[in-house]
Length: 406
Image (tube, rainbow, N blue to C red):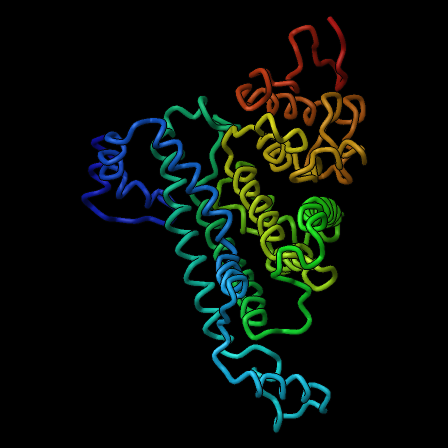
C-alpha cells in the first residue's frame, strides 16, 4: 500500500517499468469506491464492462445507431434525396475530378463518421479496457492463482506498452472500416443487402440467418487464422500478435493492420452478398467480439452450459502459449474436425507449424522439458473440473527425449 501511495503522489511515469500500471495511479480511489459495492453487483459491472468493451471497441456502435434509426423510419442522411437519386444515375458516368464527390459514392460527411467511430473506440479501449485491467491485473494481481490462466507469468512492461501501441494503431483501421460502412448505409448505399422489415424475407429466415452467419463467420475466421500461421504469413504478419504469450484485453486488437482489416472485411461479407436483417447480424458480431475479449483476457472464463459449441477461454490462451494449435474461436469443433486441436501427447512450439505438433520422440530433450514446464505453469482452475488435462502425471518420466512409463 505504501508503494502504491508513493506512486499515486509522485505521478512519475517510466514507460520501461510502469507500462499499463498507469491504472495504479487511481487504484486507491477505485479501491475505496469498490469496497462499498456488493460482490454480486461488482461481478455484474465487470461482465457488462467486458461486453460493452467487445461490442463497441471496433466502431460497430456507430453502425448500430445508423441501422436503428433506419429501423424506426428515420434517416441520418442530411442531403436532398433527389440529388441522391441523381448521384445514383451519375455513377454510370466516367469518373473524373469534375464529377468526383463523396455524395456520388454515398459517402456524404465521411470524415465525421470516421471521427465519431474513433472517439468512441478509443474511449472504450482506454476507459473500459483500463477498468478491466485494473479490476483483474491490479486489484487482484496478488491472487492470480484464483483467476489467471497463466498465474505465474505476466507480460513484461515493454510488451504491455507494445501491445497498447499496436492495439491503438490497428484500431484506427477498424474505425475507418466501420465508419465508412456506417456512412455508406446512412447515405442509402445501394450495394448493401441489409433489410429492415422484420418479415421481409419470412420469419423463418429472420431466425435462421443468425445461425448461418455465425457458422460462416467462425469457419471463415478459422481458416484465415490458420492460413496466417503458415510460415511466410506468420513471420511477416501474425507473429506480431504472438509476442503476447500471456494475452490481456489490450491484445485483442494488437494485430497487424493488414490482418485485422482482412478479418473485419471477412466478417462483414454477408451484408453485401445475402439478405440479412441488421439486428441478428450485429447480434452475432457482438457475440463474436465479446468472446474475443474473453479469449484474450488471460482470465479463466468458462463457457456456460448453454454453449456446448463454445470453448473456454483457456482454449485460445493455449494458442498464445503454444503458438501453432487451436486455431478456432467460437466453435471448438473446427479444430477437432481438422486435427489441429491440442493433444496431450504432442509438443507445440513457435517453430513447429501446421497445428499438428510433434510426438515426444521427435523433439530434442530440452524442448520436451520446456514443454513440460509450460504445462505445469497452467492454472488447473481454467479447465473443467479444475483439473489441467494436459499435465503429465507422476506416473510418467522424461528420459532421453522420450516419454516412458515408470
